[in-house]
Amino acid sequence: MKKFEELESKKAEEIIQWAGEKFKNKVALASSFGLEDVVLIDIISKTSPSIKIFTIDTGRLHPETYNIMDKIKEKYNITMDVYYPDTTSIEKMISEYGFNLFYKSIELRHLCCNIRKVEPLNRALKDLDAWICGLRKQQAVTRTNIQKVEIDIAHNSIIKINPITDWSEQQVWEYIKKNNVPYNQLHDNGYPSIGCAPCTRAIKPGEDIRAGRWWWESPENKECGLHPIKSKI
Image 1 (cartoon, rainbow, N blue to C red):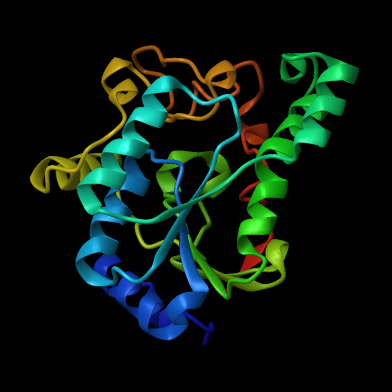
Image 2 (tube, rainbow, N blue to C red; image 1 turned 180 degrees about the vertical axis):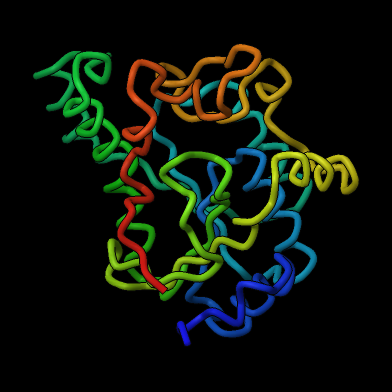
């Protein structure tokens, strides 16, 4: 029997409550304030308000993303830890490759993501035993095999918890509307997935929901390094 197999049938609320009870102050939600993350914040506020929340400010986010951060912080009265990229690394990268280096090659895009996202995430996870994410299987071809609870071997084998991995986009929206959860207004303008401003565009009718992320790259490359496919259960 796989280690966390019994949790696969649990509801999101049950998974989050389990995480809060098991890991106490050693678990946190990593939030980029997309649709899935605001749902999880609402659930956490109702079931396990002691769970910490952190976010990564890459320095290149949309104004609308900062707006929703403030709205969520005010509505739920939460304390949120914010992690920033290392200034020296940013300065060196831009000096060598330019401000919009990510358009030049996959390697340079990965470098930018690593400095702006991955390194801050590693600092955020350093003292945790588990982290909670808003990943869903339907989001991308790179995420079809994720489980609700995994061992994240890419991050020192801490526990990675994906409470709504089996939710559809419709279920996410239904929860938001039913519970009056604030969300990023870019979602009303054709942005189902939102990252850094230069790397995100609105999608066209019929396009995949992740088509607007790093749209100049092929689908199998569309991860930033925060969620490498190295987890196991």
